[in-house]
Length: 120
Image 1 (cartoon, rainbow, N blue to C red):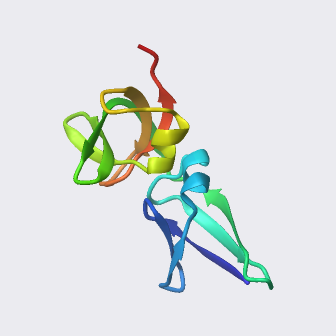
Image 2: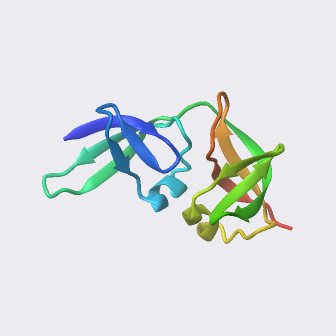
């Protein structure tokens, strides 16, 4: 079975109006941001396999990692964007780290994806 949908920062909102969990490690390593189109293949044994099929236009910006209310965030241009814990641990970022992140080029987003950890 194949389902297409859009990434929302943590899950895929399927074109069938159902939510599908996207593994945080995959979302982090693939640098998914809200709006990216995904294809989900569900195997006969129930396994899920995601593939990015349509990235939204992006821009790279620099920000600073913070932590608030149990959620890592990156402050960019006066706005806080949520970031997956898997990205924080993969890049070994910590509160105060400077990072380059990817955000959608247009529209509002609550989420970003880390592109690089900026060395001190």
